[in-house]
Length: 195
Picture 1: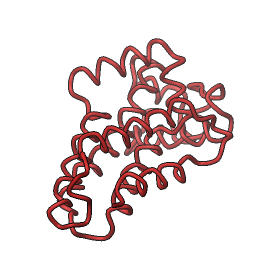
Picture 2: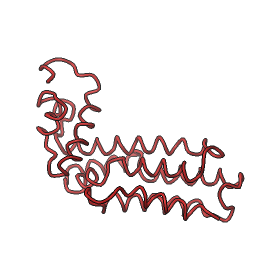
Picture 3: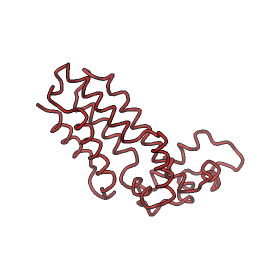
Picture 4: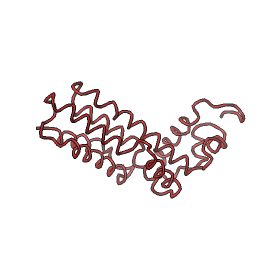
């Protein structure tokens, strides 16, 4: 346990990782401020020192952080045209999107009205989310078309929407106890991008 009054480097990420472990072990109902700080091995006040809005702000920021990571990975997709495989590149991004909060963390945002409000506000003010990922996937598919790695007739925008919408659906409806939805996404990627 870190002593009080001592700066904790990377406190946000440490708390985020601890929250993910708490939810993975006990489901969304297990997430409390105390459970997070106990799992992180830090003082009880650290979470509230970094998230003045309490657990709702913490949950919203955690999910936003994970979406931001998935969005950054997607943003690099167009520069990867012609490299590796189309299926592999898209599966990597959609898998990151599925891991960007996982079903249990996404459920937390839905069930905590304060977190939902903070999350929606961030999305409307430009936080990277599903739209940014959809745009990056569409740009990537268009970059692959002249290379012949994706059918010229493929509607890149609709395909990107189908991939992101499916990931969104799986995030919002999957039960944490069900098998990993990544296999479903891999099959969809293959189906949508083959000739």
